[in-house]
Image (cartoon, rainbow, N blue to C red):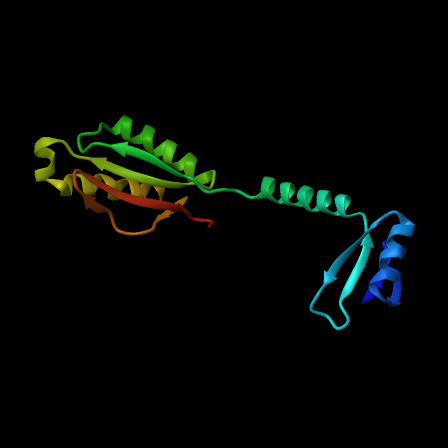
Length: 155
């Protein structure tokens, strides 16, 4: 097997016993790096330190990644203009942070007879948010709720 020292120096091709004794001589481990190569490649290294460095790199990578959450903003067809502005301001902040926003129009009782009123409000909301986000699809009526998901524009 081809042996590589801990400092990257090529020690050449040698039998397993000789490679193990070279690793023991340095007080390190013999780790197989490329088993499919002809001859197989092994490296003399501190395996515990190697595993720790890998875990540390994985931790840093996990810390840097950003998860996208879906935030929900609920409204009713008889929403006042001030309440609408307030909820749209929240939706705008969520989109700027990089999260998706689900705009939900909730109908009660006879409001369900006129879903177009709720659709108008959702369309108006989409118009107010079009500078920071775009709708993934058309608003859908599912039972007593009409909803649409808005994704941030930069993503």
